[in-house]
Image 1 (tube, rainbow, N blue to C red):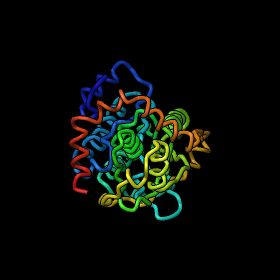
Image 2: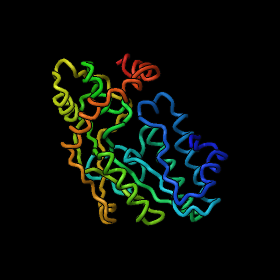
Image 3: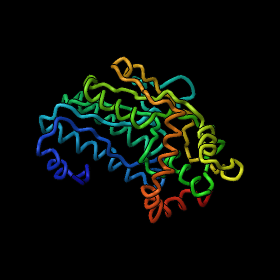
Image 4: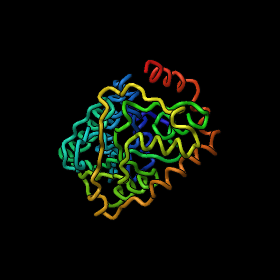
Length: 279
């Protein structure tokens, strides 16, 4: 059923037939877009989460899982973010996701609403919308176009394959304790420039010709690092080898142009121009 999670009537209709859980994947996506239109992120990520929580509170649904992100912890200069660390978001996207998390935890404390939260690291794999780093770079390289690397490219991210992330969410849905937060980190921490070099090599392109360093994103977090010991103690662990998963992802985009080419047209072209032309 297609609907807006900010619409209480649509949400009531969606759960009317009876459900055993709500898993809230819905969110406005991508930090760059949040810089241009922060209000859309506030609406979906905060008001939408509130609407879902109200629906759970008024029903007998036994579990609500809020899918969140490591970005709520903000820039992590050293060490690893743990679930007990206070959110320190530094972008409109991260702030809106943190707002959704805090609502969920407040509903647990105030109303006993059966919530649990997962915070995942940077996800990669097939079918990812091509505004994100890996699919954007791969599809640009397939077409022989340059790729835009922010700043010096030394921003570090922790990568997790979509299959591992999905398994982690399901595992926490089934086994996580109510009112708790679980980090789902892939344990694959690499600077963006290293990812870029791997993608350029996998696409058999020349680094000097196809990589362009552009002005950095405002307020760009330098480093994310998740401690996922709590989820591991629950019985989950990532299984996809990063080097293998990355190459398989590149090959997927190479053999599925019919999926992504229609996406990289129309509105996407305007977004790309708005995002990178001035850089």
